[in-house]
Image 1: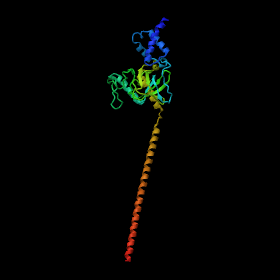
Image 2: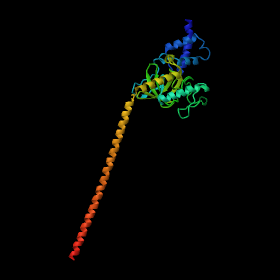
Image 3: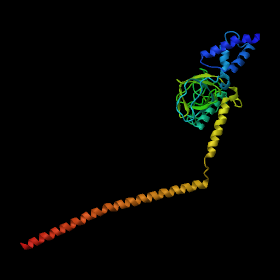
Image 4: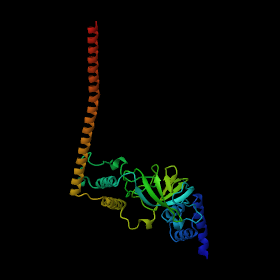
Length: 315
């Protein structure tokens, strides 16, 4: 009994801290967190708030947020706004601004730069897409600050990301960047938390922009289980998708190629014959009026000559 009374102030302190962040916690999750902190040394001292926030970002929103929290309310195909203060977690992320082959090329370049200098492949300039080195702070390295992806995540020359986000009710929606949002990156740890502030919804898709999305970070272990390290997982997924797409294209045999070449040659030959025929017809049409005018001119001069001769005889 005395033990339970001692935990009440700590639970209230945790609830008040998250209330200041406009986050409503589930009572069951809050009780479990308070018990965990009371049985450990993590909650001692002035780091209680930081420890609680760390545990929250590592939790599943389905379990940690209360049912009264704001949720994604737009159904598929609808438009409007997500509302302010809606918290979601990222369950999938992919790059859609580059082709699969370009992404694989960047990943291979990234892997080469991680090797010792004497083991790197020497690439001829202009044969592959080049990227900047790690020491300049840019290029294909991971986002270094701001709570972004860890150093293991891969920067595949980010252009535009498409994500799948989930709220505390389990509702999932697609989201597409209209501008680069810090933290969203291929190879990022899944379960990272985002705070949506009046994000536009167009035909059931969230339009994410830096001014409307706040990156909070975090991860959910259940979503990352079974994954390889972010780079190897991304390479394996891209190769599978590229192989599936290539397999869907029809295979043209040598006989099909020869038949296609013959048909193209026949079509070109027929086109040339039609052009020659049109040119001959146009040339004949131009000659006929000329001959007609010449004959009329000669006949008129002949009649004029006979008239002058008759008048001379009359005189």
